Image (cartoon, rainbow, N blue to C red; front, side, top):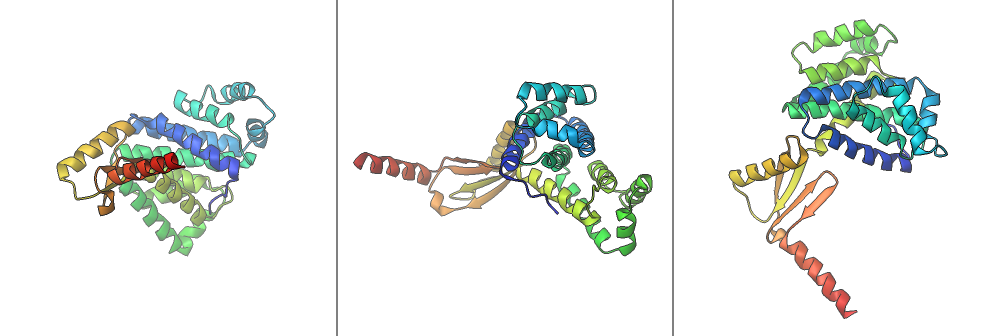
Length: 277
């Protein structure tokens, strides 16, 4: 159950996710998790205040007045990184005021995913969340208990009992998930959370194309260089592609850095073709 964002909101989500990248770059696991908690708090405030959502997304209001509003509402309760993200969001265009809620929630989940990644536990968190979602789908009684309105503390106690050996990030995410369904089914909420985790994973995986297999030492140097650039642990997937000819092509999130000979030859060919015309 994913919210389908309109064109303006999709573009704005790209911008704020890039801002989240900057906010968690070089951060500790604890700092990223604190950012997640604050963004979840902001999600709750926005979900319960339609007037605030409309004010922050009103295209007729100037950015300065929106910035002032963000500081008035969140300035005393959010740290600088979370406040900066909320300020950035207020300056962007949104297709619907309601889009702010799922977008800030996604940022909150991705911030906790970053916390897990920094602690080298992102794989574990994804697996634990998926296993938990399957257990709920397979149990009518468990699904009924977690879909019931209210009884938040009972839900948290139940899930924490089931997650007694899980990572801290998984426990935090599930505790928030089961108490903030906001009209979703429990299955729909887990789908949204797993989607956001996968989205953050895509930000820390580099897809590398080379002409021939590289050595473990070369792979490690590449991983180290990308990790330094991103400010978080990065995984490297290597694809052997003879058409590369030489050099290396690195696709990272939405960015492509292509330094292959074939790419440069193609570029030279286009330049020569242009000169002949």
